[in-house]
Image 1 (tube, rainbow over the protein chains, first blue to last red):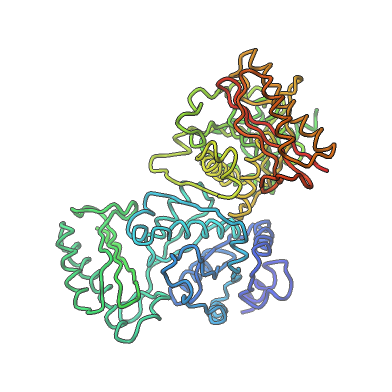
Image 2: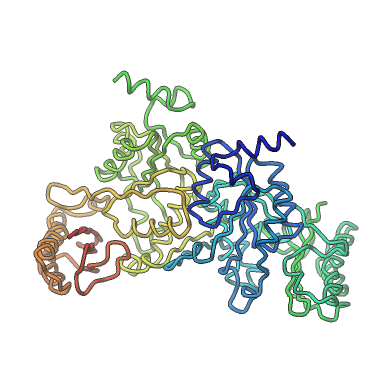
Length: 302
Length: 302
């Protein structure tokens, strides 16, 4: 406890306000200046990029950063450029006060919550495109989505200049896309992927789960159940992806409001689809339950 | 002289080979690791991005960096992605040995000369687009040029993580585009623009001047002469851009092999064209002399 207090008091040069954690920063210039000071002190910085509406999935990333880094920055920004015009940008939950409270419990150091106008000032037109793995699955269903993700994530990387950035496996393809950007553009950051956190009913935690009615929530269990079935089949020796897809479909179709966008068995890195299953694979799925689009996935190592 | 030697011996931790300056690095991973070590020592790093074929214009940038930074890195890379298929990528001069000799004289610290395959490995598809100022003038004549410039410059910024990057005013629009990228993507680097260096005949130094025959070289003087005329007129009170363009055209048309791509009087930052001249302006021109396309410009402050 005493150690904790000393650490809090000494780990930066910004005075007393810092003892209240997390410290909220809204101005990108201020964030950048604080990072300059922290880097000059040789601090190892962890970044957890989020769109707020924090749940235990995000917190597990922040806790990983707390364990592995000297300073943990959680960004909390609902990024307009990764939503298509017909998507849920306006109704996406914004819960900054609740997010700050949650992050107080784990003593995250900084919350960076800029305004859209500060991130995208008048005249902004930049776009970062990485091709490859960004063009399939989510990229096919949401054609501008990953360009928006790459652009905002690169801006956050440049502002926070983290040593490590933490992403959840729930958005598996997003992690692949961000890793491709980091590799192709030589971005000096390590990308850490942490496991999916599931509720007791097996549903992967997602900020979008709160759109589900009680009945839809029950139906949403078919996502994880179908992944469990895929794992059982593949680990049992099944090599024909169509057989696995059929079994997954049968489970998902037990939910009357569920509509499959895609089921995909692919290479864990390139996501290239496999007709014959060989080696490690990732099974990815996107399913609409009523009006809510949910994604889930499962890595199967053999 | 003794001071110089001490400085050389102590300013990095890479051992004896460093005393031969500049030290040539070809592997991006090695460059990045060396920068990590230099940054950990708190060195101020200057980067001079070039495509080699160095002339006094480039050297003036490296000298500025030597004066203002602890460590000067000159990148020497003919970037394929900024050339269109019909342009001069294959015949662009490659003179690494001569470049190293020139940089020995000014004691640049590192030359970073990666291979195309190291910069663009198999699977590379990333593209950085900044819109705005990148879409006019050179961007209109060479539609993929500035995306290629932004992408390679961002990669170099990420690998070298310079405090300051030095660019020549000769490529004025390029500086505007890079500044827009830095602003839009929050890249943590300062962009310094240094004056055009001209030969005794007034022709702006350019690696492409070596394509000119003796006769074309004499004709190429019309670029600077027309800019001198524009300056004289504008500083003398002329406010009508068309009058200035006409006077410039008259001068350029005295060169039988010269063909104007554009003449442009614009805002020094946005490059927005001005019909009525007000405040500071930049005058930009692109002129083909025979088969060689030359650009030049002049900032006029009033």
